[in-house]
Image (cartoon, rainbow, N blue to C red):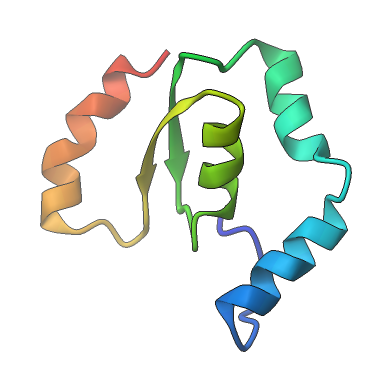
Amino acid sequence: MPDLSIALPSLELEEAFLRVVDAEGKVPAALEALGPVIGRDVVVLDAGHGFRVRQLEEIGARVTAFEFPLSEAACRGAGRVGRAR
């Protein structure tokens, strides 16, 4: 699911909104609490504009992101998903 269920007029406004909603960085902190992500392969499905992808990369994850609907090229690359740990 994308970060937002609505479309805001610009990417800048969307990212500003997401920073305010999660000002303390609770989403990446919760993911880190489930198990360390630093140096880990993480798959993000329906990545939207990549806000969560960037957050995960900032805490050390190696991220593979897919956007729906998947393109043919993305489907070919989806074999990497099985290797994410």
